[in-house]
Every structure is written in structure tokens, then in C-alpha cells.
Image (cartoon, rainbow, N blue to C red; front, side, top):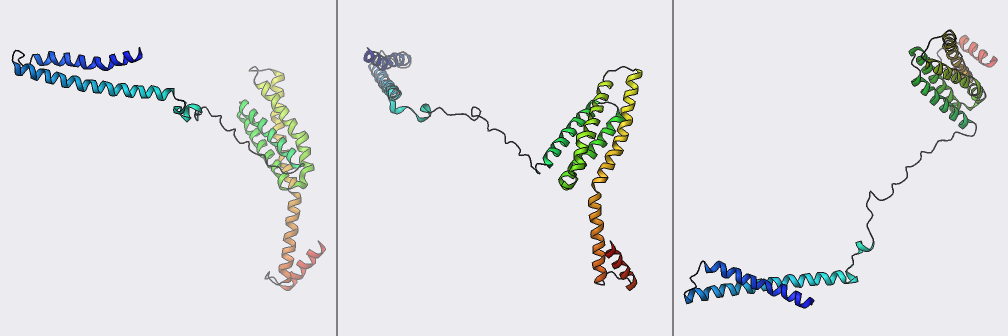
Length: 258
């Protein structure tokens, strides 16, 4: 049945072509004459022949395509292994930034300082009073310097621990209380008094924080002063200061006594 269907498709085309050409040429050539009739038959037959060749060629190509589709060897590699689009591929996990370690004693101080700065930053955003915001900003600035001093001079760690364990948490606790009271949106004697007390406490805290920061540089100041004295003594012994003899002798005596 498949052969008959293919034969019908192949030979029906020449027949239709012959009939169509006959209708067209019958209006052009006089069929009542022998010459016109023969010429029409010749042209119709030629057109039908070429139509049959074209139909046969198309049929052969379609048969070849069907056979290739049935053959296992014709299965493309891309069909066996489905391609993975970039959008379907899992995205690489973002690299986690490695936190720098400064040592078992310094790392907890740095972490606590960063946590305190983050909390004070939140309070700075939440509290609306510009005067209080300014004081919070100053406390944050000093706190950051004290935290960095633990990295620069580990000898200050005992003093910084006391600051981190009491003064800084207490300040943040009072700021949170101020934030809650200011968010009430009402005025009252107790609320106003408490908020004013906290505001005044911030001034005292800033003064205390600055003193604590200054005290952390006491050891460095002493080392600097000692280095300067030793330098002056060496310059005096080498005669590089340009001072008189009695001044050099006095400088040497001062350095030796120190």
C-alpha cells in the first residue's frame, strides 16, 4: 500500500501538469490544425515529463530522510547528551571573604568593637534628635580608634577590655532606652527627665572616652620621649648639634640621670 501511495504521488503530478498545460495552450495554438495540435502535445508532454522528474526527486529525498531518522547511527551526539544552558547551570557559590585574624586576644576585642559600632549605627539612624545623633557619631569615632589601638599596641589590651566590657555596653544600653522613649511620641515629666539625663550622660561619656584614648597613648609617648633623649645624646657626643660645650655636657648629664 505504501508503494501504491508513493506511485500515486509521483505520477499524479505529470498528469495534472499535462492537463493544465493543455488548457493553457489550447487558447494559444489553433488545435484544429495539425501543426498546432502537434506543438501543443509536444509541449504538454515535455512539461509532464519534467514534473514527474521533480516529483520523483522529492520523493527520494523524503525517503532518505525517513530512513536516516529510523537509523540509530543518525542520532546526533547533542540528542544523546542534552546540552546545559548557562541559565540552567548552577551558579558558583560566592567566595566568602576571609576574616583577618590578629590573635586570640585581639580578635574578640575587634569583633566586639565592630558589633558595638554596628548597633550604634542603627541607633544613629533611628534617633531623630540631631544633637544626640552628633554625640553618637563622636562616640563611634572614638570607639573605632580605641578598637584599632588594640591591633597597634597589644600592651593596651587590659585597659581596652575594661572599656569594652562595661563602659561601651552601658552607653549602648542607655542609647537604646533613649531610642525607645523618643519613639513614644508623647511628652511627660518622667520621659523628659530621663531623656535629658541620658543626653547629659553622653557628654560625660565623650569626655571619658577621649581620656581613655589619650591614656592608651601614654606608653607610646614615653617611648617617643625616650627615643628623643637618646637621639639628642648621640648627636651631642658626635658634635652634630652645633651647641656649645657646656650645653653638650649639660645634655649628657641630663640623659644619664634619666
